[in-house]
Image (cartoon, rainbow, N blue to C red):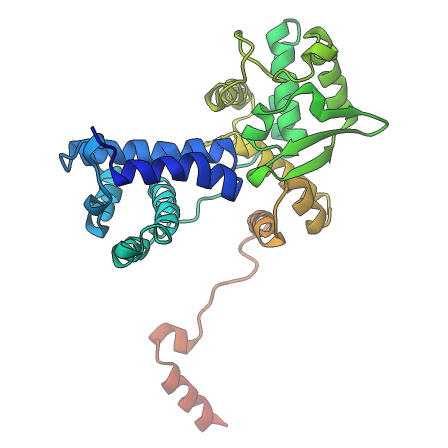
Amino acid sequence: MKPTDFSKYLTDYLTRYLPVECGVSRNTIQTYSLTFTVFLRYMKEEECIKPERLCMEDITKKRVIDFLNWLERERKCGVSTRNARLATLHSFFRYIQYRDISGLNRWQEILSVRFKKTASLEMSFLTAEGMKLVLQQPDTSNPNGRRDLALLGLLYDSAARVQELIDMTPSDFRFDETVTVVLRGKGQKARVVPLSSNQVKNLKQYMKERNLFEVCNRTLPLFANPQRNKLSRMAVLNIIKKYTDMAKQKMPEEIPMKISCHSFRHSKAMHMLEADINLVYIRDFLGHSSTTTTEIYAKASAKKKMEALQKVNPTIVTNKKTTWQKDGELLSWLKELQQKY
C-alpha cells in the first residue's frame, strides 16, 4: 500500500523535525508520539478511518474538537490532559503549514482551536516536620530501605523533577568539598545543585553498597530496577506513596491528602522561601527560566501565613458592613453623605 501524506509528514515530524531542527528531548518526542497514538485510535474507532488510510484532508477542525471532547467523555481525561494533547496537535500543524501551503486555511483553522481554561489546583507540599517524618519511615536495616531513603532524600534535597531523578547516573555527581549533582531538565537545560551533608552521607553509603563508584558503573542508572534499567515514574510514585502513607498514620495533619512526585520539589521550594532565601536563587535552584514561575511559591506561602493569622484570633476584627454595602446602592449612600456635610 502506498504511504499516505499524513504518514510521511508524521514520520518526518517525529524523527527529523523535532529532534534535529528543534532539538527536543527524547521524553518530549515520546509524549508527542503518545498523542498521535491516541488520535489514530480515535480516528479508527469513531471516524472509521484506519491509520494506514488516514490522509491530511481527513483531519479537520471539527474532528480535532470531537477528538478533544472524546478524550474527556470516553477516556475520562482531565482538562490539563486535553490541553496537552491539543498543544501537540498545534505543534504538528504549525510544522505542516510550511510544508503544505495549499491547505493553509485548513491548518490555521485547526490552530485556532482554543485551550480550555483550567481551575488552578492547590499546591501540594509537606511541612518541614512532615518531610522529616517521611524520611524517618524507610527501614535502613535492609538494602531496599537504604535505597528508598537515598531516593527520597535526594528527590527533596535537590528539588529534582521525577524525570531528572530517573535520568541520574553516578557520573552526574561531584564529591568535592561541596557535593553537587548535575540535573538535566526541560529542553536539556542543565543546572548544578549543591547537596546537604546528611543527604551526602546517605547517598555515599547507597552508592558504595551498589558499587556505583566503580568506573565501569559510572553511566548506570543511579536508581535501577532488578533488570538494572531506570525506574519508571510509577515506580518512584509508589515508593513515595508507601512512605507518605506510613507517615500519615502517625501524624495525619502533617501529610497532604494528595501527594505526587512533584510534592517533594514543591516542599523544598517552600522551605527555602520560608528560610528567607532570595526568590532569584530559588528560581535558579529549581531551573525555572523566569521568576514568574517561581512566584507561585511566594503566593502559596502568603496564603498559608494568612490562614495561620486567622487562627490566632479571627474574631478581633469584625465584619460589620456599611449602609451602602447592605443595600447595594452606592450612589444613594454617597448622596446621603453629601447632604450631611
